[in-house]
Image 1 (cartoon, rainbow, N blue to C red):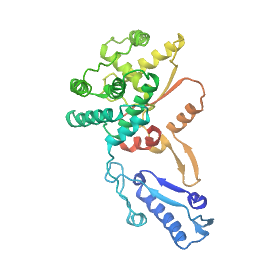
Image 2: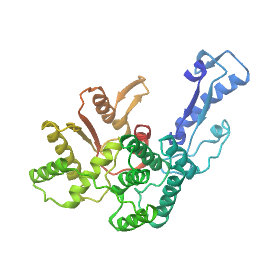
Image 3: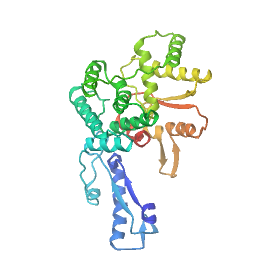
Image 4: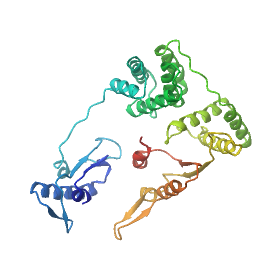
Length: 342
């Protein structure tokens, strides 16, 4: 009714994630609006209320057919929309445009190198469910490359792009793909050496925290803590993937404690970490995100939404980490789409 009255366009993203029963109700509502538009009415009856209608209003939907956790659109709803098929974007051209917009002078050559590297990684690396060579990953890498360019404008552009690709991708490769990745990077950027960053104080504190926790100081665990730290700088949503007892909890807890200790000692660029843990599979979707009570039409906050609200209202400079500790599936993670997106 809001769209009809203010005359704006509305786009319902991932529309076929809604239950079929609800979709049918939406179909009736859209049909009512479209009928009123065809008859060029200024007022019409919508759900037993007379409301005004501006003829500029329109409804669009996006959907991803044949995907887990999605339902088929009912026929009465399909008839109301004209389908528009989308095609795979031209990644090479997008890379060029984004590099030039980020201030890179040698954008044509660098875009070609990056496109070739991504195509080769896609074809030659092992197939892992957490690998992503799509547009979202590319956009994040190029955003990071732009930030590096502004921070160090005198540095050669090849080195900057190579660093951005490495920083955003290296932490997620499984061990058997690392030699292949390094070989591909060396072939695409010949003669370029990645500068090794110095994390002296952070590494020192991570070692100290591991001893405090009664853990062994394994070089791999320390490297993973630093990888989480690097990834966290460029992304607000991160996922730690690995088997049970793989050391995921130890890594994030160690980093959180290390950052808190460094902040207490007055280290610049570090903040105290406050964290909350939720197991998303231990409660229902309504209990997790909140729901409308159809009888009273009142909204009840879910566990995640109420914690999120408290964290957002807290104006202290502390880092707030909300950890969803449990198996990831489309049913609960899909609702985080907008939060995790750029």
